[in-house]
Image (cartoon, rainbow, N blue to C red; front, side, top):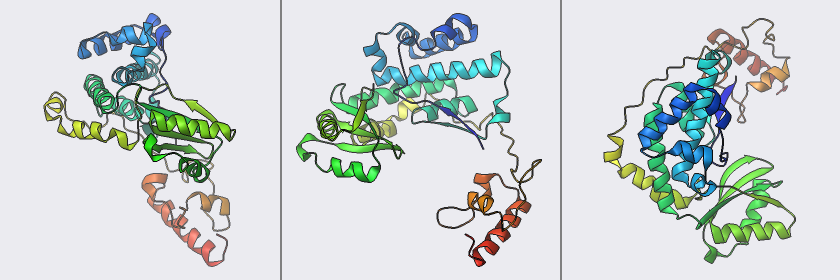
Length: 295
């Protein structure tokens, strides 16, 4: 299974999409649609900056969506590449989930632009620019990082794990004073940190006021169309039924382990795309392997 992943905040830079804008009329149209819907020139901020304006989350969010959707349109319309054949899922990293919804046809681009601009405003209102911060911590697992977090003074404010990306990269988010302190603590312990180019501390408890405001904004939501069923329909082939697929056998431990969860149960077919007949074969093979103590 493959997923098409769209990027989130922190991936933005002044001039992103500039070459595409110059060379493709459909990109110019996407940028124009964004300007008209927002009633201000987001395209100019994307292409020319300044960086301080692009970094504001009320601009960052619609800007990243605009560029992501432009690239998607080029691939699917300019080059006529059918992404339904290559990917099982459309997904996104944080903000990128909105780009995935637009690309799949579940949400219109113009609705998403309005939604993200308002979402960004609520987030920035929750924590003014300069009061919050985020960093990427490199080379530490979650257990070890939590030991350092406990050293921070409570008076410094919020310092929380925002994203556990891997065993060697974790994102921290919170009040700037607390993030600055943990950065110094980690630096003294020869640990690498990377500040993220964002204007608010996302994915932490400081965003709760923004969430409440989004829920209350009934008047705003009335301006949006309803979510639609995705236009993209993905053909999911059973990986155990295709040509040259491995044989389902209790002695094939490597194959069996691939379809067993951490709790020792067979993974559901909605996740693995296994057909009903192969799911039955796989279930029987797993039971036999367990009886013989092979897994």
